[in-house]
Amino acid sequence: RKRVSEVEDTEAVRQQSEERTKDEEDSYKALAENIPALIYRIFLRKNMNMTFFNDMLQSLTGYSAEEITHDDVCSIYHLLLPEDRSHVADTIEQTLINNRSFQVEYRLRHKDGSIRHFSEKGRPVFGNDGKPLVIDGVILDNTEFKLAGEALLETHERYRSLLETVSEWIWET
Image: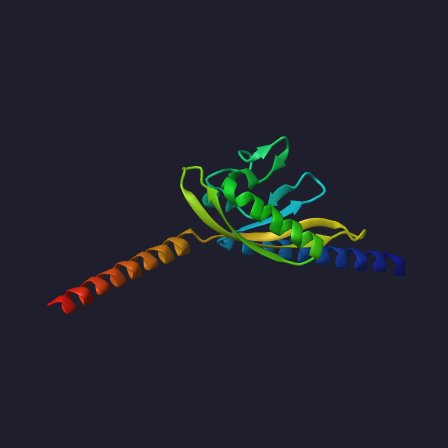
């Protein structure tokens, strides 16, 4: 009878543990889905294949994961503007060499043809062999912020030019 009770207790503990694990997984998934950024993992030892942990890819890029998968490798790299690619690649390479997190900004061509500005933060995770295994990160769309900054600079330049013109006119009269 004692043995049966121990087995039942063990089973109850296992079930509680499974329920807690499922609740935690559900919480993390809900959190990831509610963050307005793309959360990803790049598998460095699997052809740099990207996996996404939320559904933000399509809203940020216009593409589904299937549309950016070529030869069984999912990646946004080919969406980056060509002039930004080497800077991004160099930044990530230095991150892996120096075992540190990174932040990089780049532009990406959206499916609708528009140019979007992104900021990416990530960090490498190393395997038991001491070599980089994956990169975990987040990609934020900074397009509205960049456009607002450019508009502010343009307005500042117009006012400065107007002030110089008015100042010259005042001195002439």
